[in-house]
Image (cartoon, rainbow, N blue to C red; front, top):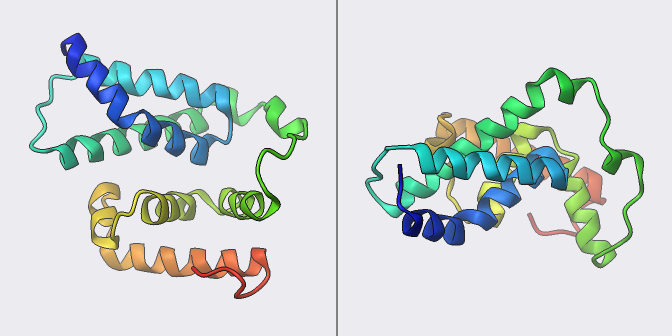
Amino acid sequence: MRSEQEVNRAIQQYSDIVRRLCMIHLKNYADTEDIFQTVFLKYVLSSISFESEEHEKAWFIRVTINACKDLLKSFFRRCTVSLDEVMEQPDEQPLDHREVLEAVLSLPQKYRVVVYLHYFEDYTAPQISSILGKNVNTIYTLLTRSRQMLREKLGGDEYEW
């Protein structure tokens, strides 16, 4: 079990990444908070020693993605509709940003994750390939296809992808 100092440092350092990944996968604040707690509980109970800060960050990303996938596969999740999907949410940001966010969130999951890691976390395709355990050429293909889908959803070449 990890010390309180280690846990506090990890929460301070990785909480934003974990929450953003959860929101990309789950599109739901309550589920995001549940997975956030699950990920950091796994960290507290884990005895793994990390080789570097990048190794630790990759571990958090991988554990978060897996926890989100597990939740999405659960019977309860498949057979219910969240209130967030039913109710309209007020505009909290300018239309352009909201449009882009909605377009990214409407992508199939395999594209959302790659887009998030590349554009928001500044990972290169080889780094993403290592994190997700996929061939680097697969990552390039996913990025290319996601850019094309975003162009179509957002109306042409107005946005620089």
